[in-house]
Image (cartoon, rainbow, N blue to C red; front, side, top):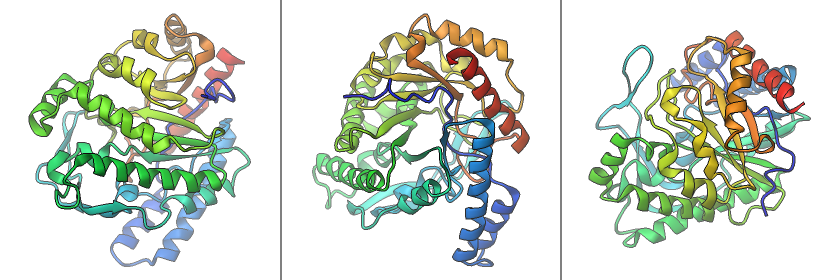
Length: 372
C-alpha cells in the first residue's frame, strides 16, 4: 500500500547541489594524483555538513548530501557493479541550452559479463548524511534503465546473457540488494532518477529508439516499468520511493523536450512508487493536463523553479501555476520543488550559490503559503 499521502514533503528538491570551489579543487587534485582519497573524503565531509546546514537554514524538512561524493549523477553508482564497464564515447552527447548547443564526452556503458553487486555502493554516503542531520535524509539512485538504454542489446554481452530477460533479472537483484541495505541503515526516502522515460516523450528520440535499439518506444516503456518495479518490490512498507523524471541536466542544458503525455498513463499508474518529481519549468515541459493520469495514491511534486537559469521566479507566478495544476490533481496530491538538481555533474549549472539558496528559500516560502 502506498504511503504517498502520509508525511508528504510539500517543499522538496531533486538532490544535487552546486559543488563549492574547495570541493572542485580537491576533486581535481585527487583525479590528477596530487591528493589522496582520505584527504578528499575530509573535504567532502566538510562540504556535506555545510550543505546540510544550508538545507536546514532555508527550512527544508528533507535533506541530501548534494551528491558531493559523485563525479557524475549516474556513473559513480552504475560502474560499481561487477561487469559494468565504461568506455570512451564514439559520439558526443548533445545538450540544448539558452546559449546554443552543448557537447559532452559522456562515457558509454557496456556489460562485459554477469552483472552483480559485490558490496554496498552508497551505503556509507547515506550513513554519513543520516549521522549529520535531524531532518529526513534522502538519497538518490540512477534508474536501472540506464544500463540498457544507452547501448541496448549490442552493449550487453551475449555469452553472459543469451536471453536479455536474464540481464533484467540480475539488474533488479543488484538494486534490490542495495535498497535492502539502505533500508536497514534507516533510509525512509529513496529517489530514483529516471531520464529515459522523459526521453521517450521526445518525438526525435522515440525515432532513435526504433532505429538504434530496434524496439517500439511503447514496448520499451512497459519493459522499463517492470524492471523498476522489480527493483523496488521488496522495499519495506515505511520506505517512500519517489521518481524524478528528468529531461537531462548538464551545465544548464537539457537533452530532451516534450510533455509527459506519451508515458503518463502507464508511468503514473503502473510504476510502484509513491510519487513523481516532475519538470514543469518552461514550455518544453508541456502542460499540467497530464496530471489527470496520476494515480490517486501518488504525489506529483511540481518542478516549477528552474535550476537552469539564475533568475528568481516571481512568487505570485508560482502560486498561479500551482492553482492551474490543482485543476487536474487535488492540492493534497501536489508539492513543490526545483525542476531538477543544481549540479548533475561536478561542473554544475550556470548560477551561483546565492542563486541556489534563494531558489530553495522560494520553494519553502511558496509551499508554506499554499499548504500552510
